[in-house]
Amino acid sequence: MNNLASPFEYLTSNSLTSTVKEFPAAPDSGAVSTLLYSLRSVDMSPVYLKLHEFLDYPEDWDGQDGQPLSSETFQRVCDYLTKKCPQKFPPDVDLNNDGSVTLSWDRGNRLVWSVEINEHKCVETSIDRDHGTSITTVV
Amino acid sequence: MGAHEMLVRLIWFTKIKDGKVVSKDAFKPNKHDEDGVSLYRSGYLTNELECLNTIEDPRKQDFYALARWPAQDFLDLDLKLMPTKGNLPGHVSITSLTPQTWEKGEGNLLARVDKLVASKNMVVIRDAVRRDYSPAEFK
Image (cartoon, rainbow over all chains, first blue to last red):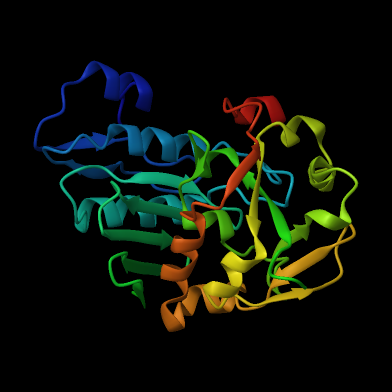
């Protein structure tokens, strides 16, 4: 196991460069080794901090049977971010009632990209606001 | 149901910014929405804020905003509405928005929902009282 400080301390005390950094694995994930996150020139630290916060959410967090973020979904989101980050700026990240996570890249542009990730699947959606069309793909 | 009617929905604070609904996930179906995403007809409520009472924990009510749309907006986007049984009078469901249809996204569904949340006719009639959700408070 590594001796890194808490995620918050790590991310706020280290400058972010385009190198691979170690980041503690999610609790209860059963992982002995740390997860490796490639922090590119895009500052993804707010995204990872938010994801770690979601791991602490209790059952019924929203008063409508909201499910917390599971370790499995957490890992799938992190894998997606490290392998397939499609934009030059970090996504907005939100926890959904069913415990899935939505990553969205939307700056009021005509094209909006979002990804919904849960333990079993990853659903990518692109929306063309100019034409009012959307394409949804399960990957 | 008349196109002139107004419909209200509870929206979790992360999906509202500066008085606007900013995410199509404000209409993401949860596991209870097998017959469609829920709204309430304003005309059937003594006070629109009654919708907040569907959230049992009053502390969690504070994290919800209440937004209102004219029924015409849904009809214009081919999002069919049907009166269904709910916790309060005037409950309606968007029958074309279920967990299954959301995932498939057929017929540009998510583009239509995206357009709905961006409607100029939408009004946030009560913003979230709190935006400082902390899991520690609810454990």
